[in-house]
Amino acid sequence: MKDLTELLEKNKAWAKSIKAQDPGFFQAIARQQTPHYLWIGCSDSRVPATQLVGLLPGELFVHRNVANVVVHTDFNCLSVLQFAVDILKVSHIIVCGHYDCGGVQAAMQNLQLGLIDNWLRHVQDVIVGHEAQLSQLSDEGQRLNRLCELNVIEQVLNVGRTTIVQNAWARDQELAVHGWIYSISDGLLRDLDMSITNTKELSAAYEDAIGPSD
Ligand code: ZN
Image (cartoon, rainbow, N blue to C red; front, side):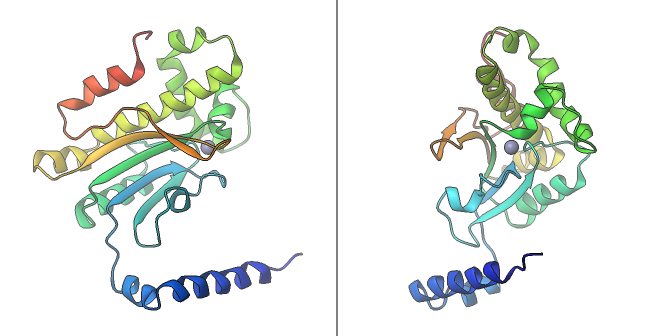
């Protein structure tokens, strides 16, 4: 079996390069983290959250799972969300999906891959909810990409409906929830124009983002 020496060596080189630019960097962030952003994204290895928005360690609080799903019974995701909102007091929550998502594709094709099928059932619920819109797209690639977008929009709605975010807005805490999508083929992020800063905006922003065909 190949050992992991290469990764440990790369780590040494990485730490050295950071220290060369800023000798006190690691001591400073060791004291505490003060990120302004929570990222909820896909586990896909091609979507490295901190790296693709050009931030440094300490600047982005991150939760990732397959197909960037936010479920109200997932205590892992909810715990990250609660800590980020109540303790770290992040100002922005970014739900970021990506095109060509393998998880979304597996859900669309109803593939049986094992335990993960149960997790991806949540994405299949998104398909059921937007069947009319998706069926208008005859090209499978376009349908997959639209489903990747719709999945983000639904997860933004889920974040906005959590008691954590609802309570933060009720006490006038400054907090915005955004829906973004990342294109693996060009490295660029796209805003899905669903940014919500209070409870009242939630439904209208959702309807606008979903579009007229549903
Ligand atoms: Zn993915």
